[in-house]
Image (cartoon, rainbow over all chains, first blue to last red; front, side, top):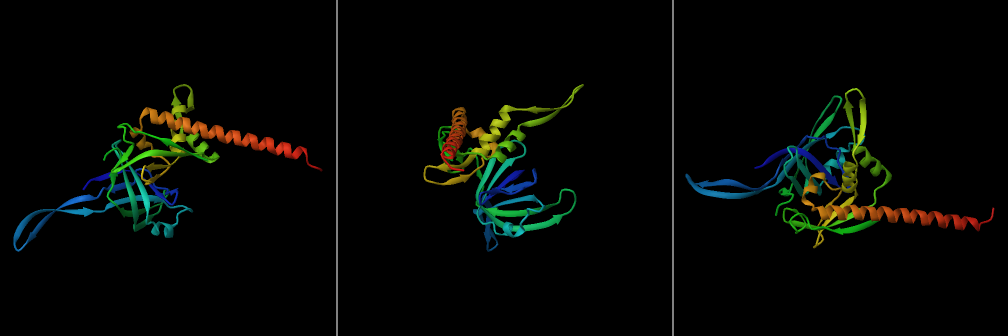
Length: 124
Length: 133
């Protein structure tokens, strides 16, 4: 499954999360291959629909609202490839996991969302 | 204040994201903070030999930032929406005609807002003139 590193823009309820540039990772989801087997035999290929997975870091400052992050159930995610490649969109994403807070000058926390398979911008 | 702009995209079938074809862009008026942020995004600090640090302003970048921030949402013909502001990386999917239309729409909104403010000020002065102290 495609995994892309880039800049994630997370839009929730008319606002945009303060993500840290370059911290985003996207697994695009969609159809994944799987081997069907049983009874000591390999039966052949199968396809399994997989969700997309978006992880990114947010700035830990006075505006950070972890309760609001946990409430995310219909975010729009825009993902721009850091290498200048195509952009991707996840039309509906929801909260899955909060990571640890990393202390320091640029204190940050990782957030993971999952959602509908990502759609490539400029493709049908 | 909002206005709707029809866009065709580079392939003539709208701004395509997966199976969705967005053919309408809704442009809104920016507030003061957003205008300042767009202008700031167009400024770059350059170090020039012998001249030190110079703040260079790019009108092209500022215009692009204003347009992206002005986009309230994209809409498909059947009412599906993608929220704004517009991601800069999406601009490659707009035709040059689309871009011109977005600039025109933004200018129309600014002109309408300026006209409304002027009329409001004039109305205020007229009402004030007839008042008693």
